[in-house]
Image 1 (tube, rainbow, N blue to C red):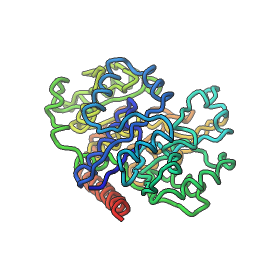
Image 2: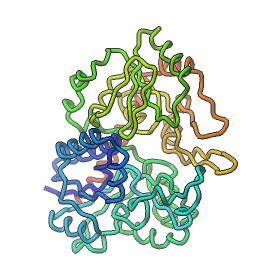
Image 3: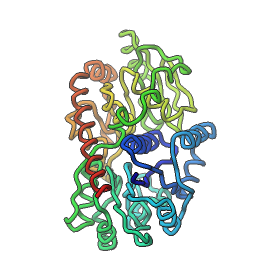
Image 4: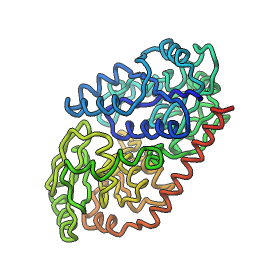
Length: 406
């Protein structure tokens, strides 16, 4: 039985990151592999989540890790990671998915952001090359085993500012047996760093395989009983910074209630944002509960990427209020190609269910229009798209298996 080590953002207090790790873990389990997550938890990133996440929510995530993740001993350095790989007799390393291949060059680390703060304040060990996600431990391995980047993202990486690091990154990429990325921008990043030698294919986030990988009882409707949710509900989930006005919310709720649909607000692990809706859910919420709440809803309206991925995977209507983009500090021009959500929906032909809130000219579309978009969503077409994404994901994993089993 082949032994596989997974390296990803498995232990951050983030629903999407937790679910993509669980999906990957169960894929390999179901296909007969002995799989463990390499338990690298960068101290600075862990400290950030501990400082920003309510204690009861942090406990829920830690309980989830203990219950569902088979992890190695903890490790912090390249030497410790290499030692664990040798100790566990791993036959391959799979890195990803998620934004594991970010790099901010020295110029970008100190570049003022549009909020007039320095980016350095928001960067962590995992944001700067080299680090284990880029395979920095590989040279320390006694046995050179296959190392794979799976549906990775370089979110936020402005590669044209990274000319001083280009050769070093290019050399590290030569250690990988296979690379695939999650979005078009990341594809450009890898093309640049590899001098055109490694232009990876774009492949789905592992959450697009969640329903076929993870046991069905993990996300049954029974998991929702403690929330006392109605049979018909639409989710609003906005961060305070990007939330619409109270009047907008009231009008949206009226549209839903007239159609005999309740409106439920869904919090983020680091932030609750109660609104004038029918039901405000409160933390703590487990990653599997969060997934189930979206899966069994009639629609999702709000921020972030993984709620959109969960919705697409389950053919749930949605409307995305995206805040990812590269925004010019002075001109307020928005480069949407920087956004992973824009890229996903653009390639899926679903931009009619998308707006970006970053532009200075942005105004919230009328709530009646958003309700219409969600209620008129072509669910049958969405099911076809979900199956296409699922099949693409399965082809990716078969390719990875072929490399592991050489």
